[in-house]
Image 1 (tube, rainbow, N blue to C red):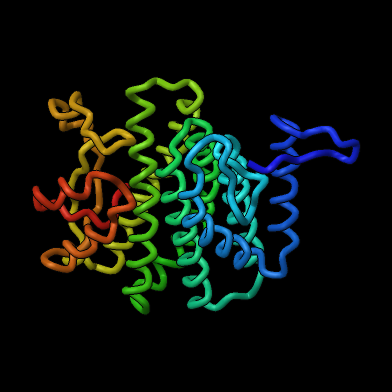
Image 2 (cartoon, rainbow, N blue to C red):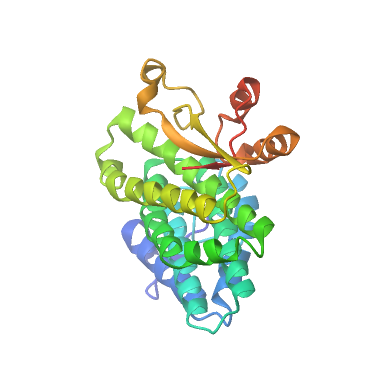
Length: 284
């Protein structure tokens, strides 16, 4: 990987390098003319360049300050940048349609980040992801969910797509929760109570959308099998169906099957779901 030096010619590494890289990323994102566009662009190339991190010394081509050993700094910084970009947009006078576009961009950004974390699921990366997602999902609950509720009658396809994209993130978060529950990792355990509270609230709000718009024919309830980070079913859960996570499933027939296929990057359990006829589309 690329080496970095200070003005005296001393090599920077470890915590010092990570601090400098974090400040550089924050400055780039915060001072961009369009912060949301910068975050989106970064997430776009990161999904591709992430494949370059094959060993601990490999670094990203576009942001060579980040390697496999400190990509968690980039993950955390991008989540903060995404949050800041959305808050910045919310200060503007946006139309209802523009607000939907904003939440669509946010959920798309989270979906891209899930792909990155799944490919590099080290504990530091998982911690950065869980910490940042808790804040962002709370922001979505505070502002985005009300927009989705109001606009469902006018833009049902767009709102459904936003919730479907959001499901990619919430589904992977649940997979991480399963991993933490089994591994009892102390560094990740602290994130479980707040993130689970957020996921439960999201589920209730989506149910509210169903009731308010009287669209029970478009959604139905189901359960998701608990799996670890590698997609393997956690055997202890098979005899405890009452502990299975409640899920919200969208549609039926070929449409739902197609949506399930599209969610292959969201969780590794999709193949099994198709075999059992469970086509999960919105899952929390």
